[in-house]
Image 1 (cartoon, rainbow, N blue to C red):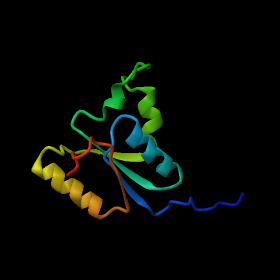
Image 2: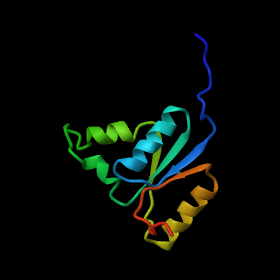
Image 3: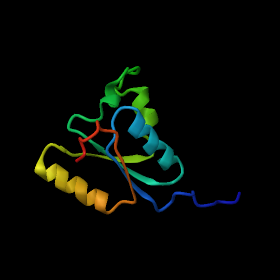
Length: 105
C-alpha cells in the first residue's frame, strides 16, 4: 500500500470554538492531518456532556467532534489564560473561533 502524507500534515491549528461549528471545522482539518489543539474553558466544552448517551458521562457528540485533537483547559477570562492563548496562537498557522462578534477582541 502506498503511504502518502496527509495534505495538512505540519499545519498547526488552535481551536477556541465551542459546541458545534468551531469544533466541526477543527475536526475536518484534523482528518486531513492538521495538528489541532482544542482550548476548552474550565469545566470543558459544553458538548462533552450534551446528550450523554453512554455510562461514561461523555457524549457521542464529543467522541465525534473531539477526536484527533489535543485538548487543554484555559480560563480566557483571566490574564494568564489569555496570555497563554496568545502564545499558542502566535505559534499556529490557523485560528478557529466561533465566539459572538467582539468577544475575541
